Length: 299
Image 1: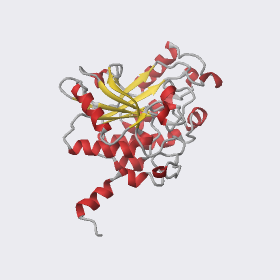
Image 2: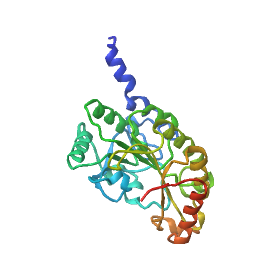
Image 3: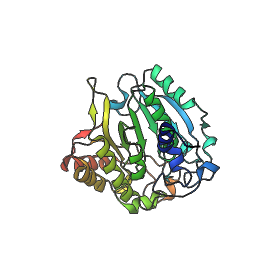
């Protein structure tokens, strides 16, 4: 039977059908068929697994505003950082160990509930590996009139091709540029080419949304917000991250240079990162960022 033009367009726009049968959603390019339950490094099939959904007041002020950021935490991850501070959610082998698999209509209900509670935005925390399923839902919500800004809050190891496939559905990209070298990425994560791929991805994010813009109340509406967690003994090659952001993205980039590193998960197994970051280490990175022309720092 021949499909109608509308039906054919819907099928062409279906991200699940495009990305899951031979999964290339992230740079790991595992190639598994997630539609039949096969899993790659992230350990996730074609479902959406949510660990929690709530108003969050601990994010950057520009996201929190008055009502709080409507955060939806997804189970599992494609990076498996050995120092992960959210390891109870991200390190699960089976996503349903720490979250529930959403049924039809559940995602829309979560978003609606956060809107009613006063959320300033819908903050998708670690969406990368479930991106096709999530953004099929986001598209439907947008078609239905949902206008809250959508935040793509990720670890930075993203496929440029996938990011292009969701262009127009993300208002605020918030990558954590974790490391300034592939060497550091290979040491601490499952991604041997972390920085190379992250650089490509952040360039694409900035191309799509530009520098961060805020509304009349100072709340973020659209643009790029970069996070970077300073690690002890310059383990994350932080100065290289500042060079990249200032030189290849924009000196107007809104950036959060974070100082809350602590040795979680298996951090003690890796020499040099088994302690908290010192104030001096954090200030060194901050001063260097200023010397490179960066000035929009999150609070």
